[in-house]
Length: 140
Image (cartoon, rainbow, N blue to C red; front, side, top):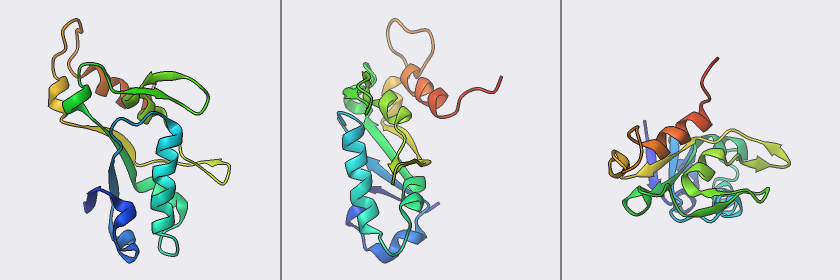
């Protein structure tokens, strides 16, 4: 895989098609509006080289668990007014392009190992596991 971790909206636009994923350090994101804005700046950067849907499909948003591992992230509000922690919000966030819901690349954390054990929880990585369940619901 060829990925960029950082600021895909700032790289040479002609290189976009060569990347499998754009990992975005969306640390302390307060909500969907912020994630939408970040995605839109990346879409603008690759205009003429990737469609908006292609950018969204490569777009992975991440939270800083060096800072937020014990709580699941910063306070986050989605486009419908629902409040949650940012990792959950990133997992639930669905890009909307021209009024159509699009697939995103995913969500994740920086320093996931800091969440391995949290006092008062029975399973390791409780916030990350929840994010995975949201993005990939179990098959019944």
